[in-house]
Length: 198
Image 1 (cartoon, one colour):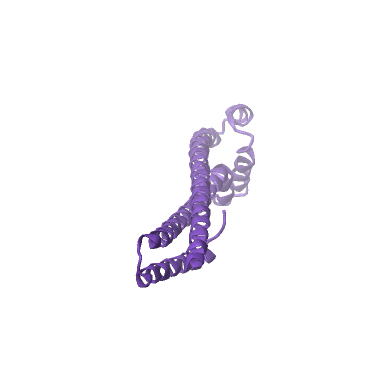
Image 2: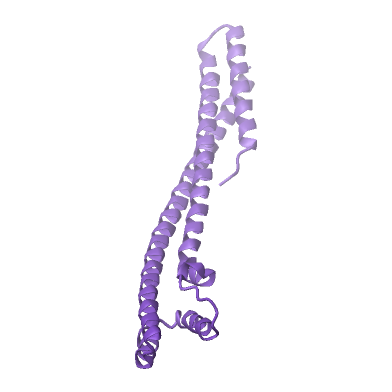
């Protein structure tokens, strides 16, 4: 009985230490992923703000350009194209002009142009996706950390049950406590087999 007690004490002690270590590691992983998600969200907000400013500027420029085009003011058209149009926006303006010259219908709504929307908001969308992935990693790490904490408690319970066996003189009680400790330890070990290692 003493040998069984020593073995159970050793396994429960090392098991509890391992579970506590893993819980700490997963908590660190959770904190890192949360930091990554926060940083990505900040970047996404910044990128979205910049994209919104660019879209607003482009909409204002195209409105002025359209007015100059309708008035037939070539000097103003040249000035706007040379001095006010952003280089990234110039191809879209050229496409718009080509549609006008060919007599086709012109889609002046910038948000109807998928390439333009992607160009402006693509970086913000990528940062949002990065934030979502980091949040998911954080949640997974949190679940793993919680699972290891529960396993630590189970191992500590087995350790306690094994440790108190020496307080009792009757073998029946000691065997019952050792049996409970072995059962608790087995359950904790079975849980550990399903958990990832950090």
